[in-house]
Length: 125
Image (cartoon, rainbow, N blue to C red; front, side, top):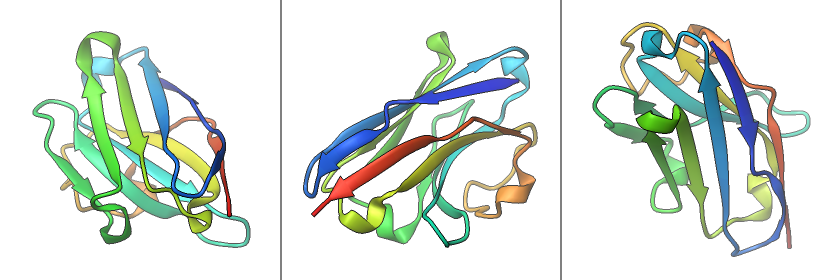
């Protein structure tokens, strides 16, 4: 499975941005897709996850009410709609896919099998 993330950019605080992650290859093997982020000097942080089959979702507490994860199975694409952005949301955002039906609240990056290349999101104050 290959993942291609896109949609990052520079946005002012309070603004919105939508990230996309297109999957290619053996997409039938995907059970869960997630978004993670990494800010400079910080560890990789879980953002949100979605069950590829039934669409159920899970969010990190700090993203609830601001971010929405969704998927379009026909396009093999998962989205992350980000709103009310804050400077502390600045990071490289990565999409990831898991082959196993892991619980959506699994926030450990290591259990995901496939990773995209990352897309930079910068929020100015």
